[in-house]
Length: 584
Image (spheres, rainbow, N blue to C red):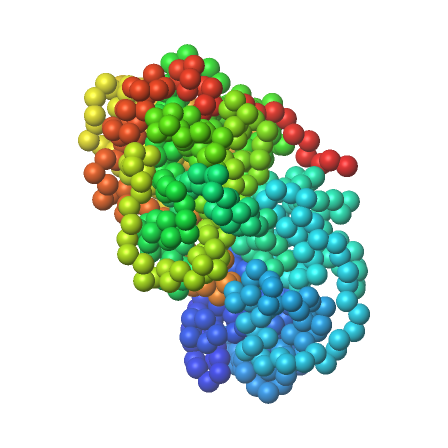
């Protein structure tokens, strides 16, 4: 393969050589020169709509949009002339003139890219006030709130939904001043083909999209003396929560997180990783049964509610391929309100289960009517990583100074297998560890399955167990999920076990995780840093297989009997049904 041609140019007096086809913006980054952006999101939205990244190119009229303008040999670029700075300021003024200015009460205050640019350019008044567009807030869905009056038409959310997830639930409609980002027939996100994955929220530079706030409900429960309020925390939360308090991306803050939750007043703090171990026990058993009978294969994981909603709306004819297992936090809620309540003589009606999740689709999941047993909801409230951080700040808890606490027993003792649930490939690796032990009838030493690790959107591998080959596939992101489902639909699937996560990279990149600016996202591999944190937890764990967990062994011995038992199905399994893509 021939070497790619190199191009030499000068940016702000610095000579730099880059590959042909590189944009001015990327070349400037390589030269250590920062050019402001607003609509740009690497590999997601590269359209040059906002023009905040304009620069001067010597010998040319007007400005060049650096995020889409390719470099040329001998090009001389100036990024900070008085003319460029004044033009950027004018553009920013025009954007802000049609933007809600309630920064003091906005969820994104302090982490808003528009606000940061306004501070940077010292915007103190608006030269072009003019007329403002008026829109009604869409808060019908249980997961997402859409406030178009804070939208700056950057189209980053559209790029995430259309280009990354291949859903297209939102797009730009209208022309001129009437342009806006909306849905089909201007319906609520609740009534269109939205999966509540929250990738649009992660992409949004302002507060135009945000999670449905549940903190008020949790505060109310914590103040109620008749409630036994219990928290459970997902694996991906501990790998990201510290970022909300200025700690490096991927810092493991498990101990501080536990202490912080106890300071908030939670009666017990349990680990959803234990719920993940329980999921593996049931899912592994379900897979072995299907595999031995060659029925409803490939079996597809069901712990990602955004993926489940996608399947129900887009592939209802293939729903029998999904595992019937509830997701870990729903399983765990059901067990806490049955087994744990009975064992410790707590009235299950008084238990208020709060799940701390990296995912806004979990809010939707816990509200699904089937997520209850004997009229008791499995989970009463879901708060995201961001919401927990806001609660801790409201309580004036200095997170970074906290001592490390430990999860409460017996429901807080999990294996390393539970920890890796938070990253793409983790569910499959954890499941295969238990499937292999069960089929081989012994504890195997080989438990690291490198082939399913990493950030690649689709990963295929074959594992040999008891002389039989099991072909597996791992997909993250709904565009990749569609690829796999089309293969199954067309009869081209030659594999038996599939893991699908709605969010690209898995739960570590969930829609409820700390939001990173476009600048950070193009400079740092956030997914890898958070995933490495979870793999490190797994590697350091004394027990790394769900089937070897003493907690699981005791739970099945005392209460459930065996994986797949009648009691297990009552508490831990569910069903799916076709959903209309659009409710008109």
